[in-house]
Length: 293
Image (cartoon, one colour):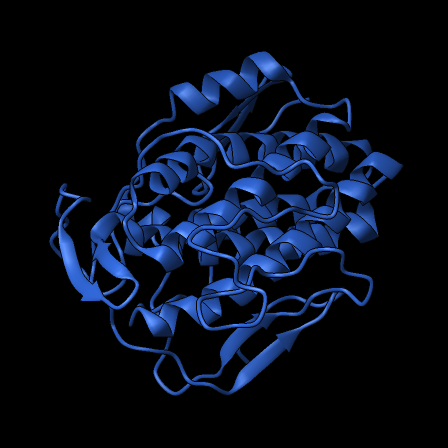
């Protein structure tokens, strides 16, 4: 299996997977030219607790992840060669539709602007898998997604353990459960090259911020909505004031029941809350790609 390096930072050499991935991690937020390294700096005091730069960055990361992983799940349903890849694809669609619903509710409550498109790097992953077929698709699918989810897992955990904001804590619980579930189903394909995957998680090459940052939403365009499948088994957690809310940061499960609230790690990034997106939505259903028009 041999691939070549391209603008997305993906490289396969002699059968060894070498991917530059930080699925949700990028150094700057929307609307920022000067990046601060202080992710603990409080940028707003909200009724749900202080909001830090790291908290705000995390919400955007979760949204951006769904904008590329959801379409990849749709590709997997169409192109997957094994039942395990098809099952993993269903988990991607189900999990990210629920996370997307949470992001779209939480972002305006915290005055955070969220993207409508993934980063160039993330779109590159979609392009790579769109061009794949047969067994090659299955192998690339499992390894790319195992690296990306493994790369963000510690970040989610630290946000969960350090945030003082109730809404961000709830989203971190949900993301933690979803990412753990997705790691599990990728491993269950039997296609993960663990030495290469773990190497990429611990030694990712540096890429320009422009490759890693999703573009800001165009003013006036409808907000992309990732529509849950009809048979969805994952529901977004209740937020404060909603029926079913049981307390700050209550845990949430996934369709596979593998989620848990664990760990520690740190979110990165800075930025500005650029207001809210238009309320008109463009629905994305399984079998279609998320698009604003």
